Image 1: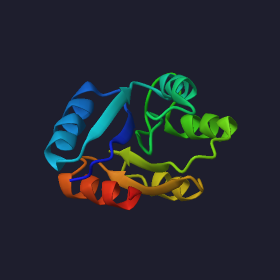
Image 2: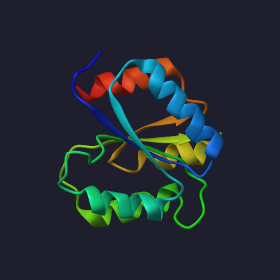
Image 3: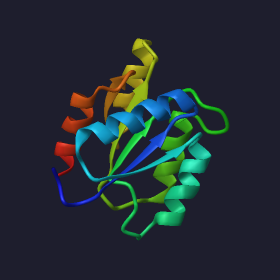
Length: 131
C-alpha cells in the first residue's frame, strides 16, 4: 500500500471498460485518483487544466478507437503540449492488429501495449513502476 496518491487518467469511450477499470483500481489497495475521459480531446483539455497541479496524471491508459480524437491523435496532441513531467503511458486496447502494437512502439512516450481486459496484477505492476 502506498501513501502517495497515484493520479491515473483513463481515456476510453466505453462506459463498461471504465467501470471495470474503476473496480480493478479499487481492488489494488493503492490510493488512486482516477479520472476517465471519453475521448482524446477531453483528455487533452483535462491535461491542460491540471498542468502544474498535484493531480496531473502519472499514468495514462489510452484506448485506440474513440470518437473526436482517437488514441493516436491524442498522442500527437500530447506531444504538442511539451509536457516535461514524467508520465507513463500505455495503449489499452481490444485491438489484436499487429500494426497497432507496432505503431505503439513508434511513440517514445508509450511504454507498452496492453490488451483488454486489464488485470489487477498488470495494474499493480504499472503502479509499482511509478515508484
